[in-house]
Image (cartoon, rainbow, N blue to C red; front, side, top):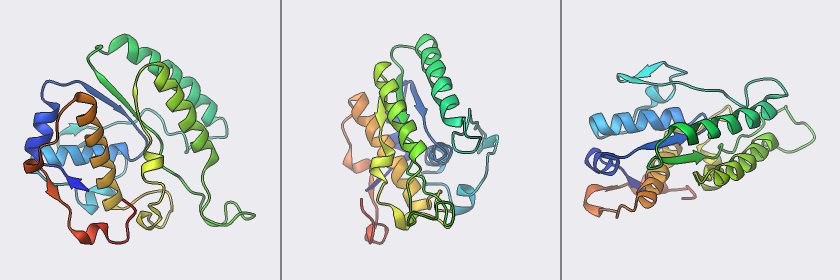
Length: 207
């Protein structure tokens, strides 16, 4: 896995328009990019645990909705809202804007929530929501990154609530995203601007 440099990210995003739609991890990815651009480093563990801040390092943060936090009709509302959002994005964004839809991460049931099945279990509504999102994004000619696929084996990277991931998994998420942006924008990778992560980060991980 490659880490990112401030110079490389600035060169990649200079005079570019990129809109990224994602799940709960996207806020942490935004924090990572802010820290990389400002200090050439990822945000730390304390900053990772920050909850729903309105701003971070003088940059604005915000959420539209959270599909997994509300009542039983949340998935249907998510589909309806997503359809409206994609239509509005198509109307207001420049054709030159790269729109990326990150699929929801694999979310597991907590112990005791589904007694008749062994833990861990996938959230089926998340899988259904991902399929709908990817299909709809493709219809609007948006890019899709299946983060559920990329990080589906990261069981060791989960924290105790079995929903959130640790700092290494967040960094991998950020690197996958930036690699996709490079490819989508036709930017060739410049090896001298990247750092190789030490073997201790890869030991025991399914990269």
